[in-house]
Length: 79
Image (cartoon, rainbow, N blue to C red):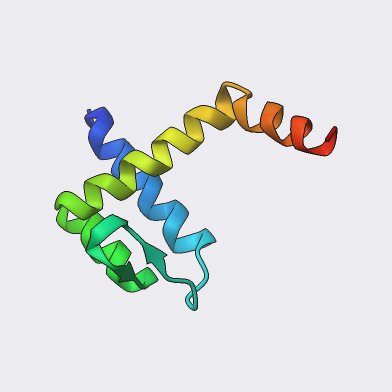
């Protein structure tokens, strides 16, 4: 049986591989900007940057699941 951290890593890898444009770069704090290929490499290596990327994606997915994203979007539309 897989650990939840392994499942999270696979989920984020799948998300990045399928949803992220090849032309997009992601900036991560003082670490610089990363291409899709570099992001995938960091996630697979499970290094500090890869762990940060996984954490951000999981936070977003939790916000979607809890309805926080929908609530924020609705408040923006009502302004």
